Picture 1 (tube, rainbow, N blue to C red):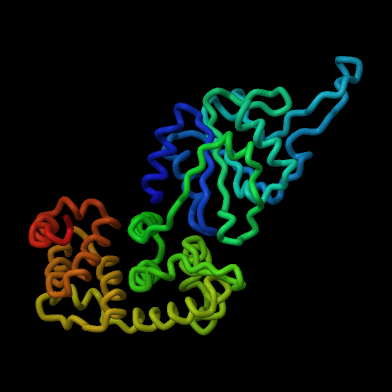
Picture 2 (spheres, rainbow, N blue to C red):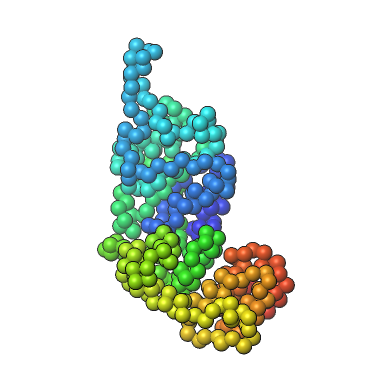
Length: 330
């Protein structure tokens, strides 16, 4: 299931408080999706990272002084209550596949009875778990069958267009977005035998967030430590091309005569660079230059710009360009 459909599914099932488990490849954005849905619904999201949790974190027996020191479970601070957390929200058990059997048994009771040691989860709260698939060989344990039977398990797929749209909205650096469009197979290139792997998460946190903050001569080592040596080497080469591009502002001053490169890597880099400069004032020139590019790069440049600034889609220049390219767009 694509990320956009996953978000719609969670939102649709939220009123029913149906327990979900999102499984997918490591670093594919499972946790981020849940947080973004909670934000869109205007409800809190309480996240528990299961690999760091102990059975004791789900309640400890204490003597009740008001009842002849009878042993009772003290409610853990993270457990949602109406008074503290509100009447609606999402309780997320992150990486639940890495929880041991004892913890999985506790989770099964929360999923089925919506209670923890007799304390009831507020009616408006939905339980969602996330986890890697066993087939990814990324540390996932076998999930107890009776726990899986208490969840609706949905699988998240990594999709280039969904990630591109999300990355532009989140301000991921254009060099990274353009490179992934150029080398889509590297968006998620996971091998458990490698120390570092390219994933949607590592491209954002380990590359985009670092790019431009460290000296250029240190970039390869930093990127290698995030996405692996092969992907880092290709990306650094792409960035060199990006940094040697003609000034996009100069191109947009003379869009009818400025040179259009033929090399695919340069075209991908230039598409992102031009889109970054697009404004309502110069968008006619963006479309004019894009008209002279090969069709797939024309679409990439204009759609990237329109996603980054939605107001551009209402301009006369975009309408005229879209009419000319409707066969490709639709």
